[in-house]
Length: 271
Image (spheres, rainbow, N blue to C red):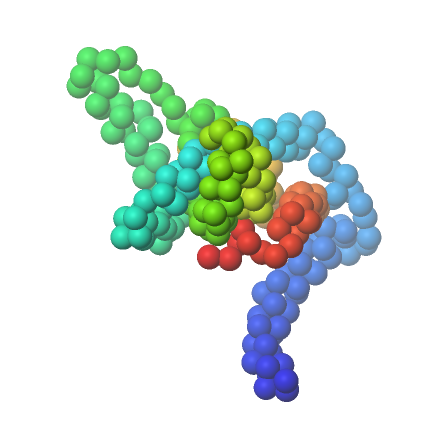
């Protein structure tokens, strides 16, 4: 038992140095002003029209991204479940492969694909088709989010679906259930932990992102993540940036609480 405690020591040291202490620093900046006096002004700043607009847009885009990822990922996970073992391993590898590439490089690739004068623009022009501009729109940001975060939805769903016993599905069919009834009354409820896990793993990073909106939004669309990033880097106002970060942390904690409630056994997060 003592040896197990010793083995967990590096983990606790890591958590203290790179999780707890940074959170305490953010909390200190968020609840103080430049003089070091306690204040709630940094947190209340989220209520300003500019910040509320950015937060509302961030929530709407992240919800849209999460829903679209779920609609795309669930059929893919079901198809992946039904493939052969050799093909299954290859398809999983294909989904994981983009995650090995740097996040910014993946986003720059989409910028080159969607930008004026980019790949799609030249293809349409060479084919005599109408050209269009996508970069600088909400659609471009959502497309970038889906591309970057879709694997985080597919893998939890695939993990849960593969654990569903086929005998349970066959029993439902033997009892007279049709395909739709088997899906909605058996498969869907049993896959709920994977859905909740995938939704959480997509919603949180899409809500807090700033690199995707900065590049694919052409700096025309301000999300709450962009405002926080600018407060830290450009405005050099760590207090306001930390206060707004604490507000976002509330959404993250709510998402984690929902995940813990519906996925108590960690079925959707263990691969």
